[in-house]
Image (cartoon, rainbow, N blue to C red; front, top):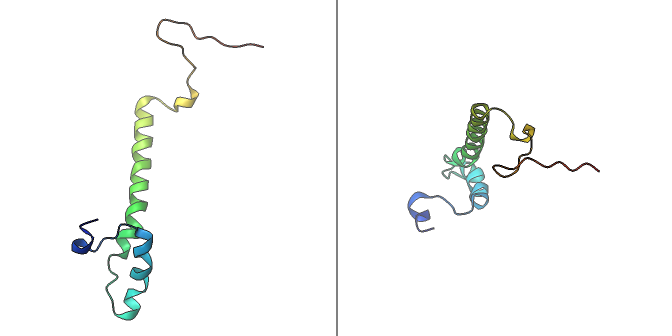
Length: 80
């Protein structure tokens, strides 16, 4: 919060998006709008890539694994 005046960053990106969007129309500086839009998208894509890579190293989807009990106990299945 204290670095906002130094860097021009806002605590609330939604609050900064509107003025940055219309600033070039009024001669203002809106060149950092791309950072607020592209950075979260690129970070999400990178996180997806890391998730896929870790799943492939682990051996697949953990939801496909058989349920197990504590170490040393056989798994109990309930049949009704």
